[in-house]
Length: 204
Image (tube, rainbow, N blue to C red):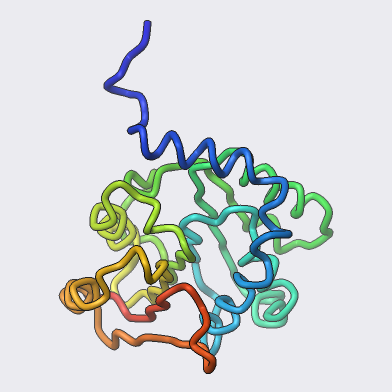
């Protein structure tokens, strides 16, 4: 019996299929540009003693970057990392990377296939919420943003990037300031990145 009520919306299904089918070439295609975003995002961001949400974690490029460039900030401190993605194939690629490593850090890594508009967590958990080039894929960006706000703690660091061509910049920033303090735009010097990167602190 086909239960349409419980099936994902058409857009989400297409996104799942698209990322599933491209998971094997995703790193080769996007690693360089994603690393450029991570460098900007991680500047002055303290990861130690934090519970971190990577909303739209994909193949784990963000965590991979942290291991290569920020490992000293998490190696000997409490560190919990939760990666969420709608694509099972992308999460499997992420898991493969972890299995090829040998580190005690990985006991604090949790990967979950889930929808960013319906996060499977109780409220007020995460100290840091990061989402890189994911929100623009959602049928309802506001719903996804509100879900991330719900699961983040008061004063949590909130860093997101969204494709500029998919965003009404002025209205989005206006809405951000309703929930956040210290809303800051982060730009690369050459201003060649396709994303608008926003850093802020959540105020509940």
